[in-house]
Length: 222
Ligand SMILES: [Zn+2]
Image 1 (cartoon, helix red, strand yellow):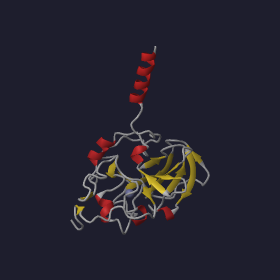
Image 2: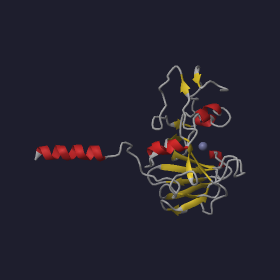
Image 3: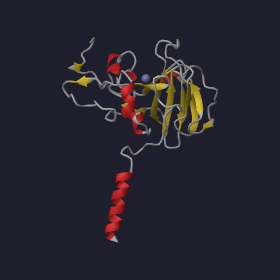
Image 4: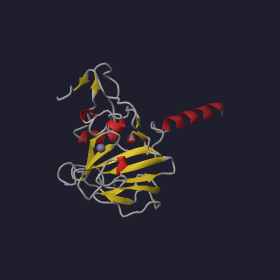
C-alpha cells in the first residue's frame, strides 16, 4: 500500500507541467504560420532590445519586456485569460498607438500593445478567456513597416513584467523557428546567462539596466 502511494506521488510529480503557472492561452485563435502569425521577438535579453536599450527599453531595464507576434493589421486578438478591463490606450504603459490592459483573478495583468484602434470595450468590463478584445496593428501606424502584437504579462500595479512563456502553454521551441529575432545578446563576461527562451529575468520597471555589457556580443553597431 505504501509503495502504491509513493508511486502515485511520483506519477503526479512527473505529470505536472515544468512551468508551474501555465494558466493563459495564446492571444490568437488561428494556428501559427507564415500567413497568420508567428513570434518575431521573444521576451528578455534579445539582441533587438540590446540595440534599443536606451531609446525604447530603458524603463524595462534594457530588456524586451514582452513577446512580439508578427501578424497582419486587423488580426483579431483574444484575451489570454478571463478578467476585467483596467486600461484602454493607457500610453503611460507604452506600446502605442493603442493598447489594452486586462487584470486577471490570478493577480496578473496582460497588456496588448500596438493595436490598430482603441478596443470597443470599457473600463471595468469583464471579458472571457478567448474573447476577441482588439485588432492587431503596427507601432508605426502604417501596417506595412512592422505590424505585430506586443504582449506583456505584468504584476497588478504594473511594476514588474514577467516572461509570458511561463504563463502560456504553447510549443514555443517550434515557434522560435519561425522568427528572425530569437537571438539573445551575449555578455562575454557571463556568456551563458539569459541565452534561452525560458531563462530570462523578470523586469523591475525603472530598475537599473541589466544589459550595459562591457564585452557585448554581437558588439554595438554590428
Ligand atoms: Zn515588443
